[in-house]
Length: 377
Image (cartoon, rainbow, N blue to C red):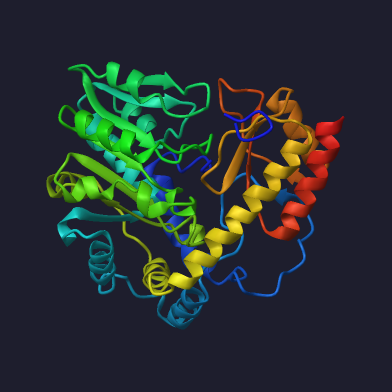
């Protein structure tokens, strides 16, 4: 944790029914194409600047926008003919066979279904606090107990403490890397060693929703553990770096037996424009690199404002920054809202900390001005 150097994914759909409802909206959302990374900046629209959902403010790849627009006249068709091609492309990208891949309505559906699948055993799931709770909440609803391990003083995962909590009652371990809401990342050698040891006892779920926004994706991804045959699941999403949050596209890479079990509990389907947009996104590597640079520039600029005011913050590796406000988050949120900026919800027990998503340069200019006013008050 940095003291003037560095101390959420938004609250996801809480039930499969809600996730399926989102499918009916996705085609209409696709028509609202956000500006591409190289597009001319547009003025901030009237109304509050929303920096609470960890969305990609730069929009999808131009190739994805074009591909989805071409497909609009065929939205009356199911995506069943295209989905196998996406699974094939994802498997090739991740270096696994197709039976390792489960496509979902965002990675949220993977988290939800995984939690239901394992939660039926009514054991325990180990995770960190504060952290992202969709998978663990699903297990809890099925009768399992959540064992929360506090983050360390740098707001990073305490892997040793988590390992010590594994018992015969443990049915899963969940790690979000980078963590939401802190944005911190686990040193890869430590995470690899922890996951290998833990996976000998229980399934390990590593949520990499934000990892592609980090400085060194290839060095930090744990997908190699799946290829090596460990009982590890890695989740990814097209909602963050790829800018397809409205299309609800994600996937998991996992042992084939786990994938088979999850598919039996999934009762929905990914949507046509989401599949088309995801396929086109995979064909545009220049977009990924350009967008990652823009997100990092936004993080660095936000950190500079926090440093001006001597604020502690977590070392960020996602598309958001988590920092100490010095006042209760409810009061801080109200003050920022008065300055036309909406920030993320509270994350107990750190109720004087705030998560702000990286927006467009125009949005961040509004945010920086609001922060300078509120933090100086």
